[in-house]
Length: 157
View 1 (cartoon, one colour):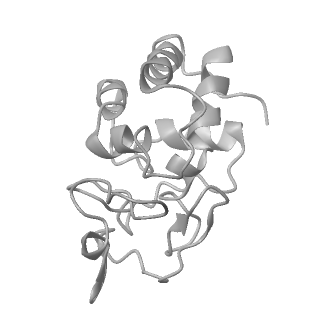
View 2: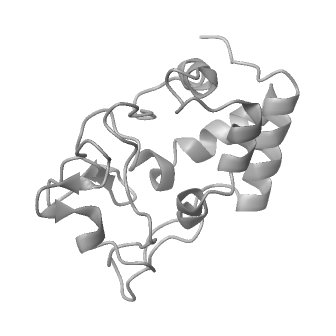
View 3: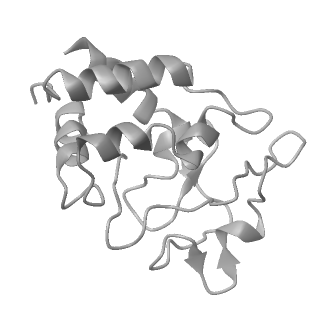
């Protein structure tokens, strides 16, 4: 029960929440405001038309205060599997994470591996001036695995 509480704190931090918005425009900053350039998700999650994520989000964090964070595979979840965190209660998010129809058809093993995905790791190495998630990656991964392997408890609504 406690493990998902720790996981939820990280997933609701701006480093995760900003790329898992309720709409098709990502959020940005520590206050999770709508992305200033208004880029759209696009079918593959990598942007639409000339507004591709990779146009600004380079392979690594761009040096300097308030510059774009980077990763070679920067993107939002694709349009057919948005994996929305924004506005979700702990109960709703836990259920969504476990639902193969909403999580990219991931089983428990895939979900455990996902904790080491490049974009997940990028969230723990934010650009200059952005706050880190409330746990280290090692602490998050431990809580994530504990939650998944001890019954994947979904907190009460």
